Length: 346
Image (tube, rainbow, N blue to C red; front, side, top):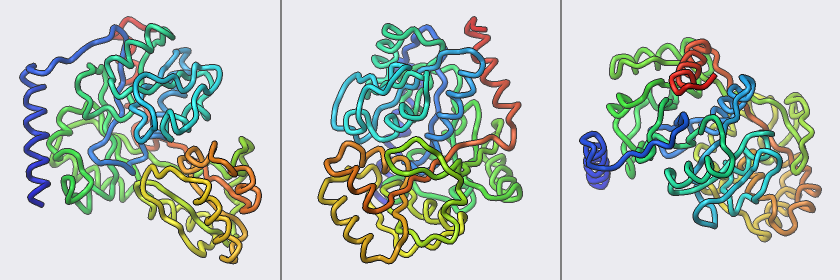
């Protein structure tokens, strides 16, 4: 807790400098839509960014996603997708950008820890209509036209602490900077309403409800998406290296399969050939019919020597998840259209 107090004081000072315009904020000449959160992960941000990109595409716009590329083994500006094909593996791009580049045909994906420099390079190279700033809430040096912040219903109702005592980056009062709050990770409208009502007592901002649902299940290394029912009544070995492994286990439970064991790795863990070998050996002794993992984990496994053999030996399956706005969809669309229109776009 003492370290949390120090961290919070440092964050408050940083925000004060931005509010007083003592730290520079740069505009780049096209609309910037930031998607971020208050926590260090596990809010469902990546599926939501994918949803926004597809929505903007469907309106005839050319979006580009700009991410830091957290955990990547490279630095600087890197093109992950040029809109026609993926141009970088996960180890140089980061697992989330690599996942988005694989799934989002026609969408430019770039990474750069320097968000202003990354935005300018993206505009120079690709002339997009709009930039989606992935994990951008704390990266205030790049001006944004729409600030969307994701919070999970659980963290609102149960509470959470500031880093390092908890996983929250900023106090709840920071939501005052947001233009729109998206409440995620809820199973029922009642649960969403409880979280929304509690939030409304702390901050007066428009809110929407976002659900992440399973789109399907596919073999690792393949794009052929099958029905989620393919996992029903199957005994599976779960493998995940994500911020909230419990949520993955719950997803598998909701798909009515039996999790015989769950191998949990650190968030953004980079798998080695030896890891895959041990997982394969553990699978053979587990009694499981399938090894099941997440999209982000598969992105980090691809390119590792022996991945194809590992996927075949373990009958490795990947659960694909997509976001949907089930409360306030029109509110979100109005915010997106207003952002594009005020910047002179159609």
